[in-house]
Length: 503
Image (cartoon, rainbow, N blue to C red; front, side, top):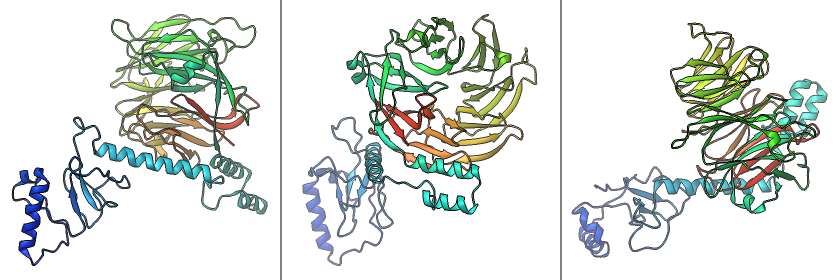
Protein backbone atom coordinates (compact mmCIF):
# COMPACT_ATOMS: atom_id res chain seq x y z
CA UNK A 1 0.00 0.00 0.00
CA UNK A 2 1.43 3.37 -1.04
CA UNK A 3 0.63 6.11 1.45
CA UNK A 4 0.83 9.45 -0.34
CA UNK A 5 1.62 12.77 1.35
CA UNK A 6 -1.34 14.95 2.27
CA UNK A 7 -2.00 17.88 -0.08
CA UNK A 8 -0.21 20.99 1.09
CA UNK A 9 2.23 19.10 3.32
CA UNK A 10 5.70 20.69 3.20
CA UNK A 11 8.98 18.73 3.31
CA UNK A 12 11.28 19.79 6.10
CA UNK A 13 14.62 21.32 5.18
CA UNK A 14 16.26 19.13 7.81
CA UNK A 15 16.25 15.86 5.94
CA UNK A 16 18.08 14.00 8.70
CA UNK A 17 15.27 14.82 11.15
CA UNK A 18 12.70 13.10 8.96
CA UNK A 19 14.95 10.04 8.62
CA UNK A 20 15.39 9.96 12.39
CA UNK A 21 11.61 10.15 12.82
CA UNK A 22 11.22 7.25 10.36
CA UNK A 23 13.69 5.08 12.30
CA UNK A 24 11.72 5.79 15.51
CA UNK A 25 8.50 4.66 13.78
CA UNK A 26 10.24 1.41 12.78
CA UNK A 27 11.03 0.70 16.42
CA UNK A 28 7.61 1.72 17.89
CA UNK A 29 5.34 0.24 15.18
CA UNK A 30 6.63 -3.13 13.90
CA UNK A 31 3.86 -3.33 11.28
CA UNK A 32 5.37 -0.21 9.63
CA UNK A 33 8.40 -2.26 8.52
CA UNK A 34 6.20 -4.32 6.20
CA UNK A 35 5.81 -1.34 3.89
CA UNK A 36 9.55 -1.07 3.26
CA UNK A 37 10.51 2.35 1.99
CA UNK A 38 6.93 3.61 1.64
CA UNK A 39 6.46 6.70 3.76
CA UNK A 40 3.45 8.62 5.01
CA UNK A 41 3.72 12.33 5.63
CA UNK A 42 0.32 13.69 6.64
CA UNK A 43 1.38 17.04 8.06
CA UNK A 44 2.62 18.24 11.44
CA UNK A 45 -0.73 17.67 13.23
CA UNK A 46 -1.89 14.43 11.57
CA UNK A 47 -0.87 10.95 12.75
CA UNK A 48 -1.39 7.51 11.33
CA UNK A 49 -2.82 5.30 14.09
CA UNK A 50 -3.37 1.54 13.97
CA UNK A 51 -6.48 0.86 16.04
CA UNK A 52 -5.18 -2.58 16.97
CA UNK A 53 -1.78 -1.50 18.42
CA UNK A 54 -0.47 0.77 21.08
CA UNK A 55 -3.39 3.10 21.83
CA UNK A 56 -6.59 2.29 23.73
CA UNK A 57 -8.26 5.54 22.77
CA UNK A 58 -11.38 4.94 20.63
CA UNK A 59 -12.15 7.06 17.55
CA UNK A 60 -15.00 9.55 17.55
CA UNK A 61 -18.13 8.72 15.55
CA UNK A 62 -18.91 12.27 14.46
CA UNK A 63 -17.87 11.51 10.89
CA UNK A 64 -17.92 8.31 8.86
CA UNK A 65 -15.87 9.43 5.89
CA UNK A 66 -12.19 10.04 5.55
CA UNK A 67 -12.73 13.56 5.93
CA UNK A 68 -12.48 16.87 4.26
CA UNK A 69 -10.86 18.58 1.31
CA UNK A 70 -7.45 18.87 3.06
CA UNK A 71 -7.19 15.22 4.13
CA UNK A 72 -6.49 12.38 1.67
CA UNK A 73 -8.69 9.29 1.61
CA UNK A 74 -6.34 6.40 2.38
CA UNK A 75 -7.57 2.92 1.43
CA UNK A 76 -8.10 0.80 4.54
CA UNK A 77 -8.02 3.77 6.93
CA UNK A 78 -10.57 6.07 8.52
CA UNK A 79 -9.73 9.69 9.41
CA UNK A 80 -11.34 11.09 12.55
CA UNK A 81 -11.43 14.91 12.41
CA UNK A 82 -11.90 15.29 16.17
CA UNK A 83 -8.91 13.08 17.04
CA UNK A 84 -7.04 14.51 14.02
CA UNK A 85 -5.62 11.12 13.12
CA UNK A 86 -6.14 8.00 11.02
CA UNK A 87 -7.52 4.72 12.33
CA UNK A 88 -7.04 1.43 10.57
CA UNK A 89 -10.20 -0.38 9.40
CA UNK A 90 -10.02 -3.98 10.60
CA UNK A 91 -11.72 -7.01 8.99
CA UNK A 92 -13.60 -7.67 12.21
CA UNK A 93 -13.88 -11.47 12.34
CA UNK A 94 -10.79 -11.94 14.55
CA UNK A 95 -11.15 -8.84 16.68
CA UNK A 96 -13.56 -8.33 19.57
CA UNK A 97 -13.95 -4.61 18.88
CA UNK A 98 -13.46 -4.10 15.13
CA UNK A 99 -13.54 -0.71 13.46
CA UNK A 100 -15.40 -1.25 10.20
CA UNK A 101 -17.24 1.01 7.79
CA UNK A 102 -20.53 -0.69 8.67
CA UNK A 103 -19.93 -0.14 12.37
CA UNK A 104 -19.02 3.51 11.85
CA UNK A 105 -22.16 4.05 9.77
CA UNK A 106 -24.35 2.37 12.41
CA UNK A 107 -22.86 4.51 15.22
CA UNK A 108 -23.42 7.66 13.21
CA UNK A 109 -27.05 6.72 12.51
CA UNK A 110 -27.63 5.90 16.17
CA UNK A 111 -26.20 9.28 17.22
CA UNK A 112 -28.53 11.02 14.75
CA UNK A 113 -31.55 9.03 16.00
CA UNK A 114 -30.90 9.93 19.64
CA UNK A 115 -30.51 13.58 18.68
CA UNK A 116 -33.84 13.59 16.80
CA UNK A 117 -35.59 11.86 19.72
CA UNK A 118 -34.27 14.48 22.10
CA UNK A 119 -35.42 17.27 19.79
CA UNK A 120 -38.89 15.72 19.51
CA UNK A 121 -39.23 15.49 23.29
CA UNK A 122 -38.18 19.12 23.76
CA UNK A 123 -40.02 20.69 20.84
CA UNK A 124 -43.73 20.50 21.58
CA UNK A 125 -44.82 22.69 18.66
CA UNK A 126 -43.54 21.62 15.27
CA UNK A 127 -44.16 23.17 11.88
CA UNK A 128 -45.05 20.91 8.94
CA UNK A 129 -44.60 23.72 6.40
CA UNK A 130 -42.81 27.04 6.52
CA UNK A 131 -45.25 29.77 7.56
CA UNK A 132 -47.94 27.25 8.44
CA UNK A 133 -49.13 27.67 12.04
CA UNK A 134 -52.47 27.94 13.79
CA UNK A 135 -52.63 31.75 13.85
CA UNK A 136 -51.67 32.18 10.19
CA UNK A 137 -54.22 29.55 9.11
CA UNK A 138 -57.02 31.27 11.00
CA UNK A 139 -56.06 34.66 9.60
CA UNK A 140 -55.90 33.40 6.00
CA UNK A 141 -59.22 31.63 6.43
CA UNK A 142 -60.91 34.79 7.72
CA UNK A 143 -59.48 36.85 4.87
CA UNK A 144 -60.77 34.33 2.33
CA UNK A 145 -57.35 33.25 1.07
CA UNK A 146 -58.13 29.59 1.83
CA UNK A 147 -61.16 27.59 0.79
CA UNK A 148 -62.70 25.03 3.12
CA UNK A 149 -60.86 22.08 1.58
CA UNK A 150 -57.42 23.70 1.77
CA UNK A 151 -58.05 24.95 5.30
CA UNK A 152 -59.06 21.48 6.55
CA UNK A 153 -56.08 19.88 4.84
CA UNK A 154 -53.54 22.33 6.29
CA UNK A 155 -55.14 22.17 9.73
CA UNK A 156 -54.84 18.39 9.64
CA UNK A 157 -51.17 18.67 8.65
CA UNK A 158 -50.60 21.00 11.58
CA UNK A 159 -52.11 18.47 13.98
CA UNK A 160 -49.96 15.72 12.46
CA UNK A 161 -46.81 17.69 13.16
CA UNK A 162 -47.77 18.04 16.83
CA UNK A 163 -48.43 14.34 17.58
CA UNK A 164 -46.76 13.22 20.80
CA UNK A 165 -45.41 9.75 21.54
CA UNK A 166 -47.03 7.73 24.35
CA UNK A 167 -46.25 4.16 25.32
CA UNK A 168 -49.31 1.88 25.22
CA UNK A 169 -49.93 -0.49 28.12
CA UNK A 170 -50.81 -3.96 26.79
CA UNK A 171 -52.85 -6.14 29.12
CA UNK A 172 -52.76 -9.90 28.72
CA UNK A 173 -53.30 -13.06 30.72
CA UNK A 174 -49.67 -13.99 29.97
CA UNK A 175 -47.47 -10.96 30.79
CA UNK A 176 -44.27 -13.01 30.46
CA UNK A 177 -45.02 -13.63 26.78
CA UNK A 178 -45.46 -9.91 26.18
CA UNK A 179 -42.02 -9.26 27.64
CA UNK A 180 -40.29 -11.76 25.35
CA UNK A 181 -42.29 -11.88 22.09
CA UNK A 182 -41.33 -9.29 19.48
CA UNK A 183 -43.78 -7.59 17.13
CA UNK A 184 -43.27 -8.59 13.52
CA UNK A 185 -46.24 -6.71 12.05
CA UNK A 186 -49.54 -5.08 12.98
CA UNK A 187 -52.58 -4.65 10.73
CA UNK A 188 -55.65 -2.57 11.62
CA UNK A 189 -59.11 -3.62 10.44
CA UNK A 190 -61.51 -1.41 8.46
CA UNK A 191 -63.03 0.28 11.52
CA UNK A 192 -59.65 0.60 13.29
CA UNK A 193 -60.95 -0.98 16.50
CA UNK A 194 -58.79 -4.13 16.22
CA UNK A 195 -55.16 -4.89 15.42
CA UNK A 196 -54.08 -8.25 14.08
CA UNK A 197 -50.53 -8.94 15.25
CA UNK A 198 -47.82 -11.40 14.26
CA UNK A 199 -45.23 -11.86 16.99
CA UNK A 200 -41.87 -13.61 16.74
CA UNK A 201 -41.58 -16.09 19.60
CA UNK A 202 -38.28 -16.34 21.45
CA UNK A 203 -38.04 -20.12 21.02
CA UNK A 204 -38.60 -19.76 17.26
CA UNK A 205 -41.61 -19.38 15.01
CA UNK A 206 -44.53 -16.96 15.16
CA UNK A 207 -47.83 -16.62 16.96
CA UNK A 208 -50.91 -14.52 16.22
CA UNK A 209 -53.01 -12.21 18.34
CA UNK A 210 -55.74 -9.59 18.15
CA UNK A 211 -55.52 -6.37 20.15
CA UNK A 212 -58.74 -4.53 20.96
CA UNK A 213 -58.27 -0.76 20.60
CA UNK A 214 -61.52 0.29 22.26
CA UNK A 215 -59.70 1.22 25.46
CA UNK A 216 -57.12 3.36 23.65
CA UNK A 217 -57.90 6.65 25.41
CA UNK A 218 -55.66 9.28 26.98
CA UNK A 219 -54.09 9.56 29.45
CA UNK A 220 -53.65 5.83 30.19
CA UNK A 221 -53.60 4.33 26.63
CA UNK A 222 -54.47 0.78 27.69
CA UNK A 223 -55.32 -2.04 25.27
CA UNK A 224 -56.00 -5.76 25.69
CA UNK A 225 -54.26 -8.58 23.83
CA UNK A 226 -56.66 -11.46 23.20
CA UNK A 227 -55.11 -14.88 23.69
CA UNK A 228 -54.93 -17.51 20.97
CA UNK A 229 -53.74 -21.06 20.70
CA UNK A 230 -52.27 -20.79 17.20
CA UNK A 231 -48.55 -21.07 16.66
CA UNK A 232 -46.49 -21.68 13.53
CA UNK A 233 -42.83 -22.32 12.85
CA UNK A 234 -43.18 -20.94 9.32
CA UNK A 235 -42.55 -17.43 8.08
CA UNK A 236 -45.58 -15.22 7.40
CA UNK A 237 -45.09 -13.67 3.95
CA UNK A 238 -48.28 -11.63 3.70
CA UNK A 239 -51.43 -10.82 5.72
CA UNK A 240 -54.75 -9.11 4.98
CA UNK A 241 -58.21 -8.89 6.54
CA UNK A 242 -60.92 -10.95 4.82
CA UNK A 243 -64.71 -10.35 4.79
CA UNK A 244 -66.38 -13.74 4.47
CA UNK A 245 -69.24 -13.89 7.03
CA UNK A 246 -69.23 -10.15 7.62
CA UNK A 247 -66.80 -7.21 7.41
CA UNK A 248 -63.32 -8.34 8.56
CA UNK A 249 -64.59 -11.69 9.83
CA UNK A 250 -61.35 -13.51 8.94
CA UNK A 251 -57.64 -12.97 8.50
CA UNK A 252 -55.90 -14.30 5.39
CA UNK A 253 -52.29 -15.42 5.90
CA UNK A 254 -49.72 -16.65 3.40
CA UNK A 255 -47.26 -19.06 5.04
CA UNK A 256 -43.96 -20.10 3.51
CA UNK A 257 -43.25 -23.80 3.12
CA UNK A 258 -40.59 -25.48 5.23
CA UNK A 259 -38.91 -28.88 4.84
CA UNK A 260 -41.60 -31.37 3.78
CA UNK A 261 -44.47 -28.98 4.61
CA UNK A 262 -45.66 -27.00 1.55
CA UNK A 263 -46.65 -23.36 1.64
CA UNK A 264 -50.29 -22.49 2.13
CA UNK A 265 -52.86 -19.71 2.41
CA UNK A 266 -54.94 -19.93 5.58
CA UNK A 267 -58.21 -18.24 6.48
CA UNK A 268 -58.15 -17.72 10.24
CA UNK A 269 -61.50 -16.66 11.79
CA UNK A 270 -61.29 -13.67 14.11
CA UNK A 271 -63.93 -15.42 16.23
CA UNK A 272 -61.31 -17.93 17.38
CA UNK A 273 -59.71 -15.20 19.49
CA UNK A 274 -61.29 -14.79 22.90
CA UNK A 275 -63.84 -11.95 23.06
CA UNK A 276 -62.64 -10.55 19.75
CA UNK A 277 -65.97 -11.00 17.96
CA UNK A 278 -69.41 -9.44 18.52
CA UNK A 279 -71.83 -11.10 20.90
CA UNK A 280 -73.81 -13.88 19.25
CA UNK A 281 -71.45 -14.19 16.31
CA UNK A 282 -71.13 -17.75 15.05
CA UNK A 283 -67.67 -19.32 14.84
CA UNK A 284 -66.13 -18.67 11.45
CA UNK A 285 -64.86 -21.11 8.88
CA UNK A 286 -61.24 -22.19 9.28
CA UNK A 287 -59.75 -23.43 6.02
CA UNK A 288 -56.38 -23.79 4.38
CA UNK A 289 -55.37 -23.89 0.71
CA UNK A 290 -52.17 -25.50 -0.48
CA UNK A 291 -50.41 -22.73 -2.39
CA UNK A 292 -46.62 -23.08 -2.69
CA UNK A 293 -44.43 -20.01 -2.39
CA UNK A 294 -46.97 -17.18 -2.14
CA UNK A 295 -45.34 -13.75 -1.87
CA UNK A 296 -48.50 -11.67 -1.49
CA UNK A 297 -52.25 -11.91 -0.99
CA UNK A 298 -55.39 -9.76 -1.29
CA UNK A 299 -59.09 -10.17 -0.52
CA UNK A 300 -61.76 -9.09 -3.00
CA UNK A 301 -64.64 -6.79 -2.06
CA UNK A 302 -65.80 -6.62 -5.67
CA UNK A 303 -69.24 -8.15 -6.24
CA UNK A 304 -68.07 -9.82 -9.47
CA UNK A 305 -65.36 -11.68 -7.52
CA UNK A 306 -67.32 -12.36 -4.34
CA UNK A 307 -65.71 -14.63 -1.70
CA UNK A 308 -62.46 -14.65 -3.65
CA UNK A 309 -58.85 -14.00 -2.71
CA UNK A 310 -55.70 -13.76 -4.78
CA UNK A 311 -52.15 -14.91 -4.13
CA UNK A 312 -49.04 -13.72 -5.93
CA UNK A 313 -46.58 -16.53 -6.65
CA UNK A 314 -43.38 -16.91 -8.61
CA UNK A 315 -44.42 -16.09 -12.20
CA UNK A 316 -48.09 -16.78 -11.50
CA UNK A 317 -51.24 -15.25 -10.01
CA UNK A 318 -53.94 -17.45 -8.48
CA UNK A 319 -57.50 -16.26 -7.85
CA UNK A 320 -59.33 -18.70 -5.54
CA UNK A 321 -63.02 -18.85 -4.61
CA UNK A 322 -63.26 -19.86 -0.95
CA UNK A 323 -66.78 -21.32 -1.20
CA UNK A 324 -66.52 -23.31 -4.44
CA UNK A 325 -62.76 -23.90 -4.46
CA UNK A 326 -62.56 -22.83 -8.11
CA UNK A 327 -59.20 -21.40 -9.18
CA UNK A 328 -58.20 -19.12 -12.00
CA UNK A 329 -54.51 -18.93 -12.94
CA UNK A 330 -52.65 -16.15 -14.77
CA UNK A 331 -49.05 -16.60 -15.88
CA UNK A 332 -46.62 -13.68 -15.41
CA UNK A 333 -43.02 -13.04 -16.33
CA UNK A 334 -41.90 -12.20 -12.78
CA UNK A 335 -42.62 -12.81 -9.10
CA UNK A 336 -45.73 -10.97 -7.84
CA UNK A 337 -44.84 -9.15 -4.60
CA UNK A 338 -47.89 -6.90 -4.10
CA UNK A 339 -51.62 -7.11 -4.90
CA UNK A 340 -54.90 -5.24 -4.42
CA UNK A 341 -58.41 -5.68 -5.82
CA UNK A 342 -60.38 -2.75 -7.19
CA UNK A 343 -63.92 -2.40 -5.83
CA UNK A 344 -65.78 -0.56 -8.60
CA UNK A 345 -64.18 -2.40 -11.53
CA UNK A 346 -63.40 -6.14 -11.72
CA UNK A 347 -59.65 -5.58 -11.76
CA UNK A 348 -56.76 -7.03 -9.76
CA UNK A 349 -53.62 -4.87 -9.62
CA UNK A 350 -50.24 -6.58 -9.21
CA UNK A 351 -46.72 -5.32 -8.51
CA UNK A 352 -43.81 -7.47 -9.72
CA UNK A 353 -40.17 -8.00 -8.90
CA UNK A 354 -39.33 -6.83 -12.42
CA UNK A 355 -40.81 -3.38 -11.63
CA UNK A 356 -43.95 -3.88 -13.69
CA UNK A 357 -47.39 -2.99 -12.31
CA UNK A 358 -50.29 -4.49 -14.26
CA UNK A 359 -54.02 -5.09 -13.84
CA UNK A 360 -55.84 -8.35 -14.55
CA UNK A 361 -59.38 -8.14 -15.89
CA UNK A 362 -61.18 -10.83 -13.88
CA UNK A 363 -63.85 -11.19 -16.59
CA UNK A 364 -61.29 -12.78 -18.90
CA UNK A 365 -61.60 -16.53 -18.61
CA UNK A 366 -58.53 -17.21 -20.69
CA UNK A 367 -55.12 -15.65 -21.04
CA UNK A 368 -55.60 -13.91 -24.33
CA UNK A 369 -53.84 -10.80 -25.47
CA UNK A 370 -56.22 -8.47 -23.60
CA UNK A 371 -56.06 -9.87 -20.08
CA UNK A 372 -53.60 -7.18 -18.92
CA UNK A 373 -55.80 -4.10 -18.60
CA UNK A 374 -53.16 -1.55 -17.46
CA UNK A 375 -49.35 -1.58 -17.42
CA UNK A 376 -47.01 0.72 -15.47
CA UNK A 377 -43.27 0.43 -14.90
CA UNK A 378 -40.86 1.12 -12.03
CA UNK A 379 -37.08 0.78 -12.13
CA UNK A 380 -36.98 -1.66 -9.20
CA UNK A 381 -39.05 -4.41 -7.56
CA UNK A 382 -42.50 -3.14 -6.57
CA UNK A 383 -43.30 -3.93 -2.92
CA UNK A 384 -46.70 -2.24 -2.45
CA UNK A 385 -49.64 -1.05 -4.55
CA UNK A 386 -52.55 1.04 -3.25
CA UNK A 387 -55.62 2.01 -5.29
CA UNK A 388 -57.21 5.36 -4.46
CA UNK A 389 -60.95 5.55 -3.77
CA UNK A 390 -62.23 6.70 -7.15
CA UNK A 391 -59.93 4.14 -8.80
CA UNK A 392 -58.53 6.67 -11.25
CA UNK A 393 -55.05 6.65 -9.69
CA UNK A 394 -52.72 4.19 -8.02
CA UNK A 395 -49.74 4.58 -5.70
CA UNK A 396 -46.79 2.18 -5.79
CA UNK A 397 -43.49 1.89 -3.92
CA UNK A 398 -40.41 -0.12 -4.83
CA UNK A 399 -37.13 -1.44 -3.44
CA UNK A 400 -35.22 1.62 -4.66
CA UNK A 401 -37.16 3.81 -2.21
CA UNK A 402 -39.30 5.36 -4.98
CA UNK A 403 -42.96 6.18 -4.27
CA UNK A 404 -45.04 7.27 -7.27
CA UNK A 405 -48.65 8.33 -7.80
CA UNK A 406 -49.89 7.11 -11.21
CA UNK A 407 -52.84 8.23 -13.31
CA UNK A 408 -54.51 5.00 -14.46
CA UNK A 409 -56.25 6.71 -17.38
CA UNK A 410 -53.12 8.17 -18.99
CA UNK A 411 -50.59 5.73 -17.35
CA UNK A 412 -48.43 8.74 -16.45
CA UNK A 413 -46.72 9.54 -13.16
CA UNK A 414 -48.51 12.43 -11.45
CA UNK A 415 -46.29 12.89 -8.41
CA UNK A 416 -43.27 11.41 -6.64
CA UNK A 417 -42.72 11.32 -2.88
CA UNK A 418 -39.09 11.85 -1.89
CA UNK A 419 -37.22 10.65 1.20
CA UNK A 420 -38.27 6.99 1.52
CA UNK A 421 -35.32 4.64 2.19
CA UNK A 422 -35.31 1.09 0.87
CA UNK A 423 -32.64 -1.13 -0.65
CA UNK A 424 -34.05 -4.64 -0.69
CA UNK A 425 -36.82 -4.99 1.96
CA UNK A 426 -40.47 -5.87 1.32
CA UNK A 427 -41.99 -2.77 2.98
CA UNK A 428 -45.68 -1.73 2.97
CA UNK A 429 -47.15 1.63 1.98
CA UNK A 430 -50.14 3.23 3.76
CA UNK A 431 -52.37 5.71 1.92
CA UNK A 432 -55.15 7.57 3.77
CA UNK A 433 -57.20 9.70 1.41
CA UNK A 434 -59.58 11.01 4.05
CA UNK A 435 -56.68 12.57 5.98
CA UNK A 436 -54.71 13.31 2.79
CA UNK A 437 -51.48 11.62 3.90
CA UNK A 438 -49.08 8.87 2.86
CA UNK A 439 -47.19 6.89 5.52
CA UNK A 440 -44.20 4.58 5.00
CA UNK A 441 -41.48 3.12 7.22
CA UNK A 442 -38.06 2.98 5.60
CA UNK A 443 -35.31 0.44 5.98
CA UNK A 444 -33.52 3.03 8.13
CA UNK A 445 -36.38 2.57 10.69
CA UNK A 446 -37.69 6.14 10.20
CA UNK A 447 -41.44 6.64 9.74
CA UNK A 448 -42.18 9.35 7.18
CA UNK A 449 -45.47 11.11 6.52
CA UNK A 450 -46.11 12.98 3.26
CA UNK A 451 -48.94 15.14 2.01
CA UNK A 452 -50.93 13.20 -0.56
CA UNK A 453 -51.90 16.49 -2.20
CA UNK A 454 -48.44 17.76 -3.20
CA UNK A 455 -45.85 15.24 -1.93
CA UNK A 456 -44.48 17.54 0.79
CA UNK A 457 -42.69 15.65 3.59
CA UNK A 458 -44.65 16.61 6.71
CA UNK A 459 -42.82 14.69 9.39
CA UNK A 460 -40.01 12.19 10.02
CA UNK A 461 -40.36 10.08 13.17
CA UNK A 462 -37.31 8.18 14.48
CA UNK A 463 -37.70 4.74 16.00
CA UNK A 464 -37.84 4.68 19.82
CA UNK A 465 -35.38 1.74 19.73
CA UNK A 466 -31.90 1.49 18.16
CA UNK A 467 -32.04 1.03 14.41
CA UNK A 468 -31.65 -2.53 13.17
CA UNK A 469 -32.60 -4.41 10.03
CA UNK A 470 -34.45 -6.88 12.25
CA UNK A 471 -36.39 -4.18 14.13
CA UNK A 472 -38.07 -2.11 11.41
CA UNK A 473 -41.23 -0.65 13.01
CA UNK A 474 -44.69 -1.68 11.83
CA UNK A 475 -47.27 1.13 11.83
CA UNK A 476 -51.00 1.72 11.46
CA UNK A 477 -52.65 5.12 11.04
CA UNK A 478 -56.33 5.98 11.41
CA UNK A 479 -58.55 9.01 11.90
CA UNK A 480 -60.55 6.96 14.44
CA UNK A 481 -58.27 4.73 16.49
CA UNK A 482 -60.46 2.52 18.65
CA UNK A 483 -63.62 2.74 16.58
CA UNK A 484 -66.14 5.33 15.44
CA UNK A 485 -65.58 7.64 18.43
CA UNK A 486 -61.83 7.17 18.50
CA UNK A 487 -59.24 9.90 18.09
CA UNK A 488 -56.81 10.24 15.17
CA UNK A 489 -53.32 8.89 15.66
CA UNK A 490 -50.48 6.62 14.60
CA UNK A 491 -49.71 3.26 16.19
CA UNK A 492 -46.12 2.00 16.05
CA UNK A 493 -45.00 -1.50 17.08
CA UNK A 494 -41.29 -2.19 17.52
CA UNK A 495 -39.61 -4.99 19.47
CA UNK A 496 -41.91 -5.74 22.47
CA UNK A 497 -43.44 -2.25 22.69
CA UNK A 498 -46.48 -0.51 21.21
CA UNK A 499 -46.56 3.29 20.94
CA UNK A 500 -49.35 5.72 20.12
CA UNK A 501 -48.72 9.11 18.48
CA UNK A 502 -51.94 10.99 19.21
CA UNK A 503 -53.12 14.52 18.49
